[in-house]
Length: 244
Image 1 (cartoon, rainbow, N blue to C red):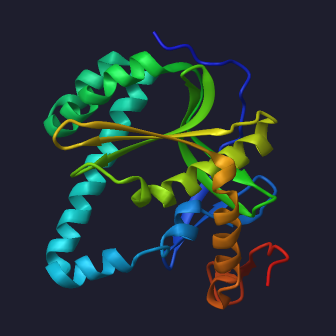
Image 2 (cartoon, rainbow, N blue to C red; image 1 turned 180 degrees about the horizontal axis):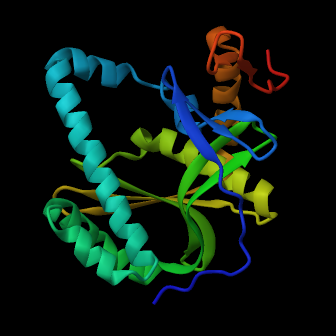
């Protein structure tokens, strides 16, 4: 039985996607891009080369399959950590591969996860002009951490995960801004199709400069400085940091 911390109250915020840009609207009415939107074009050379090599049809099929598998495994983890075993059993139907992958992760969750602060929570930062939805924030080996669940066809090398580390570090900063609770540890849990579970544990301080750099690049891209919403006469301007 997993224990959830009382007293963590973060207002829900909604997201919408316009022209490939995912924006969250804060309670104060600010529109902030998601961290995945900010990072989506970072270090994509290898991905573009792979797409050219296999063709768009194959690439799109593999991408959809991977995204579906990852979403399903994430839902299994979320239900399990919420102590909703009935929902885990219910979702198993028609999702056998994803359930098998989750089953490989389950012993790690049992051993490592302690007090849970939040799951699937929308977060935002006025300091970074950024938002997103975190998988899980919980104690991991007795230290509070941002935890992200990932699936992969094969084992991942550490260098491949830098975007994941930047993303998790951003969530730690957003959570601190919303709650005053400091998080230094970030954890990426990867389960592969052959059943291997990889644990990547990092310190957010090693990735905050990367986060600053990506935000500067994003906000200095002219076509992202204003997002049209509704008609041409109703333009929402992002609250721009003093970069550039």
